[in-house]
Length: 146
Image (cartoon, rainbow, N blue to C red; front, side, top):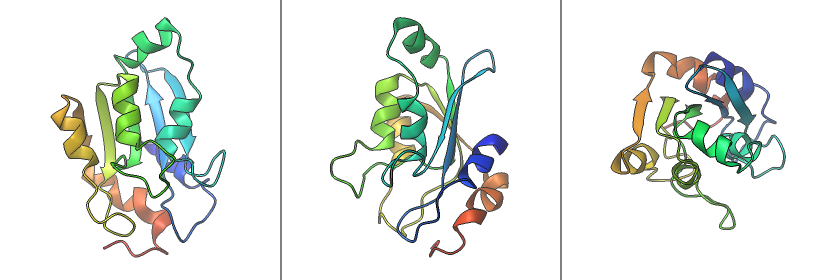
C-alpha cells in the first residue's frame, strides 16, 4: 500500500477527481503492474492504468487469478466519463480475487459508490486498511472529502 500511496502523490492535481495509486501484486509477492490517476490521460483511473499495462496472454490471466490489487481508494462503481468502464468491472473482468484499499470513496463526485459491495457480491475478498486512510487521502485534502 505504501507504494500505491507514493504513486498517488505523482498524480497531476485535479479539482474534479481524486489522486489515487494502484499496484497489482502476484501471489509470489512480485509486482505485476502499477498505475496512478491521470497517468496516461486526464480520465484514466489508477486501477485502469495498472490493468492497461498487462497483456491478455493466458499466463497473465492465470497470474491475475491469484493476484492482489492495492488501491489507495475504493475502486469506482460508476464513472463520470460515460465512455469508460468502472474500475470494479475491470477488476472483475481481469479475474483478480483480492482487493486491498485504504479508504472508501466519499460522496465528493459520486453520491453512492458501491465498489466494495459489488466486489464482495462477486466473491472478491476486500480488505480495508483504515489505519492507512489518512496517509492515502493526504494528497486529496484540497477536495471536499465528506
